Length: 83
Image 1 (cartoon, one colour):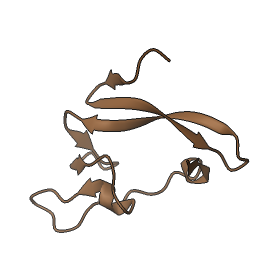
Image 2 (tube, helix red, strand yellow):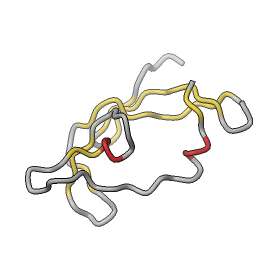
Image 3 (spheres, one colour):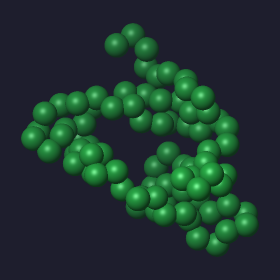
């Protein structure tokens, strides 16, 4: 692949090699930086980060909030093992 990353509206993405549940190599796009407002499923502005120790930690608290927002896990993505 000649391009190491791409830019989509508000985010830089780069390819990551992962293994699926069957052990097959797959490539997925992973956000490496966010440049503009992001929104949760309720349409509220949220503050994402690109890595965290937990899924809840991927959304940092907004100035108005005390707790990060909960995002339900994507069942298909939860079957992917990062290598």
